[in-house]
Amino acid sequence: MGANNSFKQLGKEEEERYPSPPPETELGVMGNVRVFSFMSNVLELYLPKVFEMFVSLIGGAPETDDHKAPEGNSRVDGDGRRDS
Amino acid sequence: MTTEIIFSVKTPLMQNDPNRYHSKKSATRSDSEVIKLYLSTRETAYFSLLYSRYSGKVFSKCISMLKDEGSAQDATQDIFIKIYANLAKFSEKSKFSTWIYSITYNYCIDYLRRKKKEKNLFTGEMDTPPDIIEDVEDSELLEIELSKLKIILEKIPVGDKAILMMKYQEEMSIKEIAEALEKTESAIKMKIKRAKAKALSVYRDLY
Image (cartoon, rainbow over all chains, first blue to last red):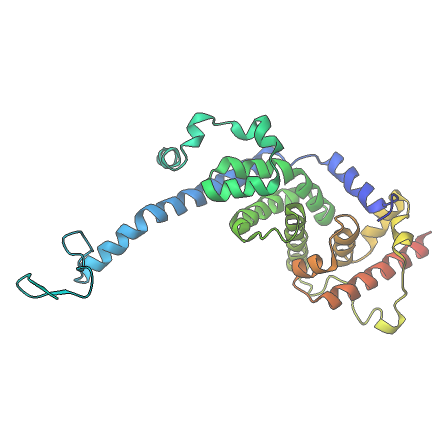
């Protein structure tokens, strides 16, 4: 687009006339951003725990080291003996 | 207080230099570097840096489209929240500035559509059937005197104004405009053709 572009000149003129929005706008934006960020952090931190709690409430047991499934194809019988 | 505790836990870098986004190093970082840093650290200071880079431009475009400072402030706030919510979807197919401006114009068109309760803010097919639309050279439009161009842009439908600004002010490609306005490329080509013809006919009527 050639050197004579009145649209570009218009854009520059408007940017010079309104260089930035008032500080309240930034406060509003950053306030919302912090709230969303906080909520996503809370979800990230606590959602797995809530899920585990839900599992235990419906009768399941969360997977711990003691309850982990044995490696390989072997199974553990009722007396805790490994059946390979 | 709780938020501060969580942020300090999640963002240990913040403790070293809370104002580092104002530092020389951050100021010279490209937009895409800042976005990557923001997405990897979730540090709000990086988003604040993007805000400081683009808020003025977004605000001036909103005033130009909406013609009201109060509405432009609200629009700027909503647009940046939209940008924040969709930042992970920014695919770097286009420049970050182009992506922001497409959100801005799209928002302003939607806002005016809702406010005026009009479905179509562009010059319609009934106004100028395709076979009689005049082919206008870009140079004819670009070389119109600035003061006259301002008046012309106020006289044409706001959708036409937006599409001409996207094309000639932001230099967006047809594909980018089509993606921004969720239209096909051929529909956009036709809208640009109609908008150019409308602008030139207003110019001829007035001058």
